[in-house]
Image 1: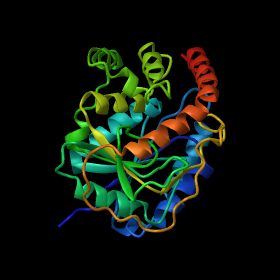
Image 2: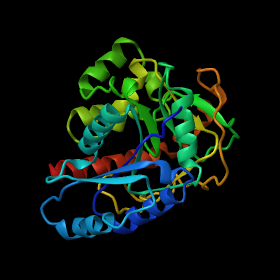
Image 3: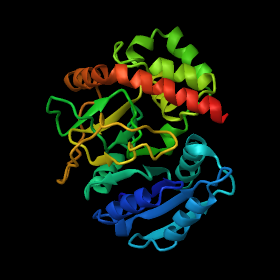
Image 4: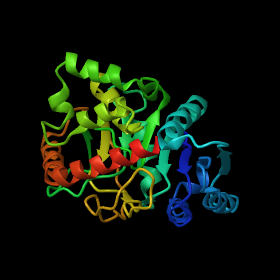
Length: 300
């Protein structure tokens, strides 16, 4: 019998965003069968009041099989919080579904991810499953494989997360040695290698660029849906690690997406559409990236 994966929710100091995220999750058909584990990151210097507001709300959450709240006494930052949290929970359960506090999900989000985690559980070529799809111009199939990992509503197994490499410099060296940088950058359409280099220089603590690089060096793929079961509400300038943009806005898909086993190969047509989408936003992204790097350098 297939087990329901636990949900890991990472929260910080955004009460209204967190409430929307939890409310959407509660409307999922598998919510009542799912264990919810919440990691509440600790305060920095002067923002304890907002964190206390969020933590007070967390005590009221119901509608899940169980709710476990883990309060961090110090501020780990999103990257370290996710790395340690996903490691802890996948060690305990063998797999997990991961959500951050600025994601609104479709009522079929949990069903899709659980089905995908069960269908591909023993296929070592599949490293994770993802529930977001970019606003591309083509119509993808119901599910497809793509090289990038994605971080907006995803699921992972212990077997694949165990490959996660924290050392960005090691990953960059492997990408260069295997001549994978061009492919890593979506055939030159997006500056992912620049993001990895900036992480190495400690100008940002991005976990997801290292996860994507991990997939690349291990020839891993991600399962993606043809329609987006996740909508990002945190691109309003409210987050520590995000900026204000409408580039990634999507219509939330309100119907089930059925997962059946397909060939574990990249969907070249959808891959080209995603690369084209990234190319269309690249100039504005680069300028925003510089602003983020500058902010991080001031903080650190």
